[in-house]
Image 1 (tube, rainbow, N blue to C red):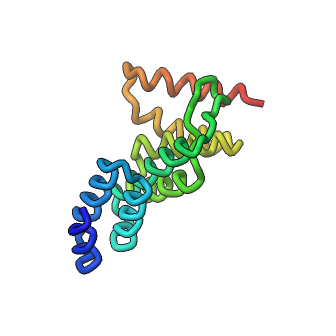
Image 2: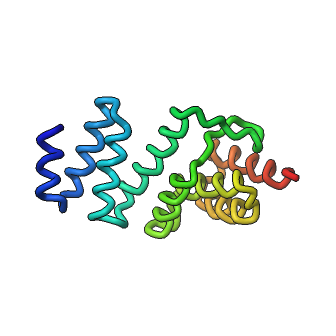
Image 3: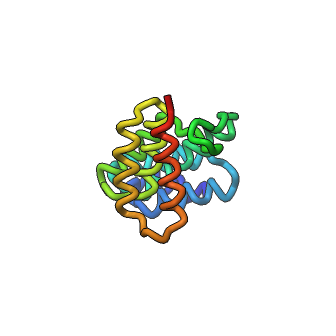
Length: 151
């Protein structure tokens, strides 16, 4: 791992190398260093969907490790979407406008911030991508209903 990190310092234009370094740090249970490696990779590849997604996910994990309470406003215990995670997901939507996880998470962040109209818009986009028979569609419909019932 240290050798890969040293090589990337010399040759930072290796996208796969940054991904491997971050994954190695995660396997070693060093999420802060994985986050740093992904961030460095993003400096060289600012629109890479894989890096953006990984950074957003790590933000959520780190927030949970810091004791962030789950959001119960939609009826279920849902992880709080930290602002930085939401920003990475928004950047991902700029690259892949129909990215389902990003639509869900940015919608959730908007709902948690009280921006119900924006959350509804994002979740309706996601609903249009979700097959009729999907369990996730039924759950998404429940969340949209709960969003409507919020004061």
